[in-house]
Image (cartoon, rainbow, N blue to C red; front, side, top):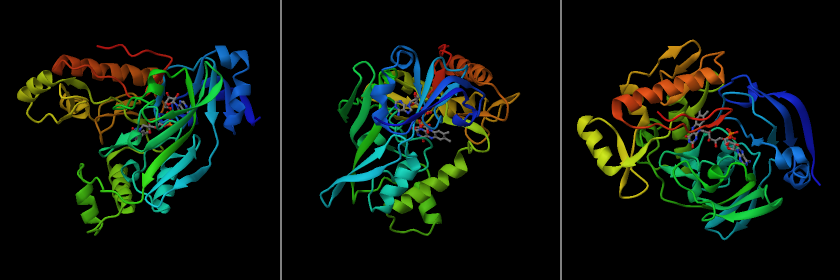
Length: 348
Ligand SMILES: Cc1cc2nc3c(=O)[nH]c(=O)nc-3n(C[C@H](O)[C@H](O)[C@H](O)COP(=O)(O)OP(=O)(O)OC[C@H]3O[C@@H](n4cnc5c(N)ncnc54)[C@H](O)[C@@H]3O)c2cc1C
């Protein structure tokens, strides 16, 4: 049996990086995942709505969550296997993601360097298959350990079980079914570094690094991210608010013909292309826009920001205005990346 702590009417303002006011009827802080089977024995958790909350860096509280909020606190990182070339590292769900990146680099392991400085917890990383600078976490995941709510058992899912895709996974499609308790990653000691992504070469050159190692790439990317993205400790945000739309190739080419500067990337198959949401939002004139305390970052058009006291509902209303105008101008539907609590996304 593990340990947990229950807080009633818990404030969540400091538990979401938008910094919006929200309150949970009940917050359960779980220090040890071994407590989950016992906790889910209680009807309120077994039958009621449960929101698993990590660092709150990918959620927007448009309203208070109904039911119980569960926060996992376990913090262990350990090496499970080491064959000299590759190492399996296990981290508990409550570990801060960037702390794990630094830990692996400190142990001479490569792989996670491009994912440096992404906010949030290890437990949330598989949910949307976090990605940045040309790398996704799914590439390195060996096993995800998760409590399965409908069977009451801890299950081990292999990488292929997890069905990773762009900002997507099995877990994201079945949010009410899984509580991720730990993640195991297979990391190489050596690998060809991925440097061909916006500004990485230039940043390494500015750092005076001619033959970079993984640790230098993490440093370069941390510097780039710090410059490019607003810091949630200063202005509330959840990183990119919209996903880059994946559209049929023919539609992407027609858009490119009409707007030659539109950035376009490979899609999830030959028949599709991913197009830049940031470019469309900026071109539609939203970058730096502000309505009360809800705004679009002047640093990055993809980032919805809370300048102070915006409510989640106000932020969501602005997101809808932005999506509607992109729909009108480019005939492309934008979808939010963060999980919306207490509201549904209304496609334009
Ligand atoms: C400044 C900034 C930059 C960002 N940059 C990136 C980026 O480059 N790439 C990227 O992919 N993301 C980025 N994000 C989004 C965010 O950091 C990631 O999605 C992160 O994985 C969320 O972690 P979290 O612990 O805060 O999750 P939360 O926001 O707490 O939760 C997110 C989702 O995961 C679920 N969840 C959380 N923990 C668990 C668990 N243990 N078991 C089951 N479900 C769980 C929640 O219910 C929710 O649906 C950024 C966010 C910010 C604020």
